[in-house]
Length: 104
Image (cartoon, rainbow, N blue to C red; front, side, top):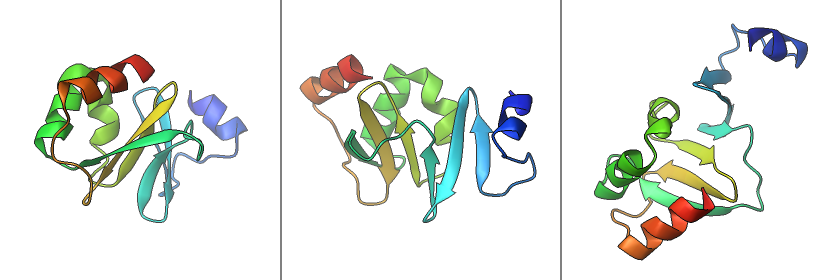
């Protein structure tokens, strides 16, 4: 992967680029943003360390590494993105969780 990063012009020493698991993140406006994120994606905004945050981690354990970047992160799924932010929701209904999982 580092050879791919270097070919794309991304230095291992760059403070604004991080690889977490198999995802690449770029620091944009103080938010670690998944390189796969597109502005057209639906976003689910979740408050960091809330019940919804931990419920998502239980449902999608592969997000543990990306969300370890901090309390301002956007992670892209197949057709939806999860945005961790101070102003996100504290809880999600079973229906919202099922919808998120189906679009992930």
